Each structure stands twice: as C-alpha cells, then as structure tokens.
Length: 117
Length: 115
Image (cartoon, rainbow over all chains, first blue to last red; front, side, top):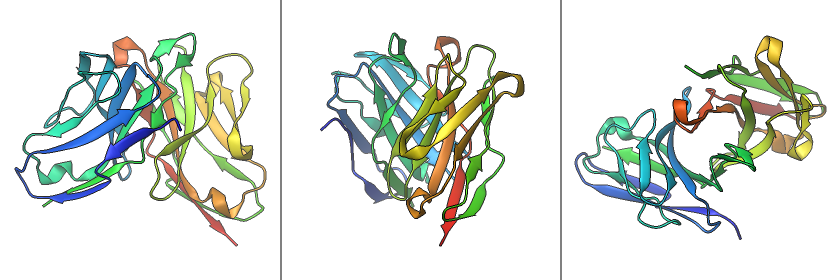
C-alpha cells in the first residue's frame, strides 16, 4: 500500500530533550516536506526537500533540522525542543513538485502530535 | 506574497442539506488550487484539484469546486451532506520555486453535521 509513515504518532517530552520524528514513503517520490498544524493557522511548511541531499527552509524553520540521505526517508529533528514547538506535525511527499504530473499534489502522513513541557 | 483565506471557521449543516465552503486566494501567477479534508485523528486527504481547463472540477466523495479567476475564489460544494462529511477542510494554493515550492494553506473550516 502506498503510504507516508510517521513515527512516533504521539510524544510528550520536556524542554531541551532532543528528539527525531521519522518519515518514510514507499512511493519513490522525489519531493518531501514537513508541515506543522496549529489551530486557526492551517498548515505551515517547515522544511522541504526536492531530492536526495537537497533541502531548503520553509516558512517556519527555526528550531528544526532535517536531512535527506536517502530518497524514502526525511526525518525532522528538534535539537532542543521548546514549548512553542508543541504542535501537530505532518510529513508529505509527491512524485515531483512541478512537472507533467502537475504541481503540488501532496500525499500526507497521519501526523505526529508533539507536546513539549 | 501568496495567501489563502477561508472566511468561515465553523459551519454547521444538517444531514442532507447542501454545503458550500468559501476560499479566496492571493497569488500572482497561475494558481494550482486544492481542497483537502482532514477527518479527526487523520492526515489530509486530497478532495480535488484545479490546474487548468474547465473551471468546475469534480472530486471524490461527491464534492465539486468552481474556480473563478475574477473573484480569486475556489469554493467547495456538495449538494447533499452525509454525517461522514464532518471534518475540517483546507483550501491550498501551490507555489513555485520563487515562493518556496510549497502548499500555502488557509486556516481551515470545521464542518459539523447535524442529524
């Protein structure tokens, strides 16, 4: 089954304790991205990756890191989490961002709810 | 800069009644527009998309949307709502490399369906 898998789905942690949210897709997609969802704000892009070893900042990158060492995986790293990073996080992917298949049709994971105390 | 506005934060509709969700966008180039639905505890599922051509697009679950360039709108409609349509709906516009290769989302509209 084609899917985007995130782990963990739920996490409660404390300020300053490094954590990683993993994201894996099995569709051989080139493009992957991370969004955070906050009430009333919709989803905002944190980072994205056009392909392996190519990453770039989105609208709200502060406090986050990413890496794209292989095509299927795109982990989100919070080096020193703070309470303002409490949010619902989504990983998404698509075959290519803009091409003959159109632009922007993202496939989303089920989300990771993070609480930082 | 691009933006998407969904004026209605909450909408309550009776089962069997029609539904219309409003979406206005601001984007300088040709817009690629989407509607996604998020059921409780789930990720986002694509309902429909507009890239070009016919301005009335059909999607899954009986939804349709109409692109109106003159009004910068992309409203979502369903003629008869089912209880399973209770969810949060997001409108989004896709941007190219100059604007971050991303979807810019509206704030969402939460739909409650009354029996």
